[in-house]
Amino acid sequence: MILDPAGEVKEFLRALYHVRSVVFEEIPGLHGSVPSMRWMYHSKALDKSGSVGGRIDYNMHGIGCWFIDESGALIDVDFDYSVDEKGVEIFDCWRVKRYSESIGSEASPVLKKLLTLAGGLFLLSG
Image (tube, rainbow, N blue to C red; front, side, top):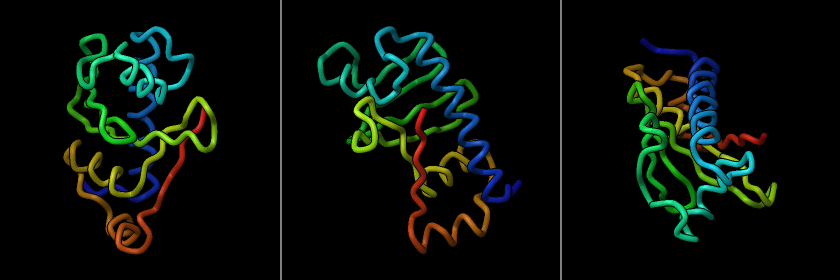
């Protein structure tokens, strides 16, 4: 099934909000900021990879983290601290495409075109 680009982004955000809710519920000390996971990892309070509550797998990478939810969907974000000191999650068209493929959908032609033009960076705050 091919979703329209807006539908793909909405589905990605739905999955990301689910990941956020599990992470906030299961990892104390994040203070409402998933990017705080990076600081916890660097201070050895969190492993580089693991499972959150037995429900979400994660793996810290470079400046972000990928998550695999209970359905096997891949949600990959980078963390940006230039907007807010607590950090925000950022993602681009490539990550939305990878998410779509992980749930068995083909990326829309418009999303594929955006990938070739500018990479289409998105920012999630709050």
